[in-house]
Amino acid sequence: MFLAFVAIIFLISSVGSVVLYSGNNNDPESFSIDLSNGKYKFDRRTDTYGNYYYDVTSKEGADFDAFYLPDKLYLDIPKDAQSLIQNSNYFYITFDPTQEDLSTVDFIRFEVRNNAPSSKFFIDSVTSENSIYLFPILDCNNATINSPVVFLKSSNDTNINYENYCLEIEFEPQNTLQIKDALVYLLQGIDIG
Image (cartoon, rainbow, N blue to C red; front, top):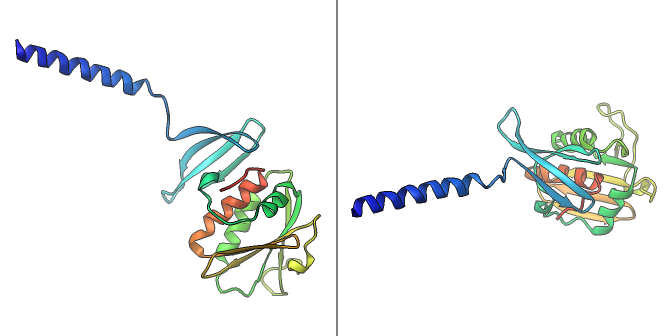
């Protein structure tokens, strides 16, 4: 009799836990978040190398990729610089072509171009003439309220400065994805941090 009672309790608790567990439809692979400028859907995907990223979409037509959620980007980008990037339709991304490793800068430029909304337009530029990059030459001295400059510098340290409509982003290679995501979120009008 005691064994029958234990067996019934075990069966009821097993069925109950299955019902309770299957009643939870939260899918960690796909979720929605209310952000500063609307509701966005995040679908977790895997690239060809096994890295996770999010395909981010909204009813307003946003469609871009991100590796980090916007509230997980702990970069110290001043609020007035964030606002300038969010509200500028036209800007420059510039870099020093004599840097040792340009692969991270090129990656950020490529990804920002592929993930920026169609209403945003940027021009690639360099700080000095060279034979590899045939871009306009400009630096922070050319920044204005109507055409701000984002100056990317690969470095051994991450340091972000904003002055006179120029956002200088010095970053370590391991922060490349965070810098890319921060710029894309800001161009999409999404607050970070």
